[in-house]
Image (cartoon, rainbow, N blue to C red):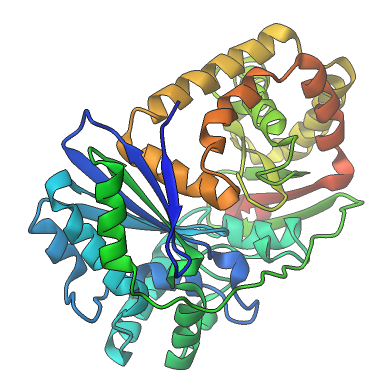
Length: 416
């Protein structure tokens, strides 16, 4: 059980505190309830751009990283389609430095023309290097629009294209910042060797006077039920044929989410998984193959992906893969297969919880989902899943009519 204490400030900031008396370190994690799905489809990439802008300084902190490094701290952040998360690790006796810099940039970010242009160029270069100029880099830029026709999961976190980032104005940036970066759209999670009263006092001192922001009413376009198979093949300068088969699944709070998570592990997690055994060991058609879920808050995807040794084998593999899917749906999985992947999940969960940073992040995330205490009931959900539930869900998820695929063929093969 991960202990935690929650309280909410008058300005709407939700705070989750986890006490750990065994460590001299502390973690300050700030989760903002904003991700790529909240962007205007005609101006994407702003959530990720702000991940960079938030390190550009604020009213009283000229250099964010330097201020933390002086006290032995370090920080980083990540953006997803659902959230933006910032975290700081530092000695516990320096926690006020973390609260100072985080509270200052929450409402007083240094949004200047120079900072916007600097970070715009950083993101443009990242877009080119990671997504446009390396093999398979544009996979999710191409795959998401195939899998999602209406929902804003339609685009990747980096944005739809470079042009969107290039034309972000200061007015666009200010509007996004004031809409989403404020106390009542954030969850502050603190972990370390402190007393509850101490944390309440410190948080109130640093955040209590910050003004609340506008209430955000999220009205996302729902993805319509997929009724037919979608597929797309593109040609790129890549060394081997890559394939991606995506299947619709429930969102993070769906009662079926954990079941599909275990299904993905049964299918393609590790060398003992069904897909690896069949296509890597037995048939020797692929150089790699795996299955995983995106972990989206809204209904998302189970993904089967891999790379072929021989590009001419793509049609053969696809036919065999659908036959395999039909077979597993008809015959189901055995209890031993379920137990194997469940034990792996529980072991990885146990090791994950050893990290102070992981605990702080997960407490904030589960609070966003509805209640930080979900962090303690999640394991029980997985432990209670039966083979019968898995087999029933297999038939619902592994349907060709709700599958979208992307095949990336090498140029040399296309020219033959």
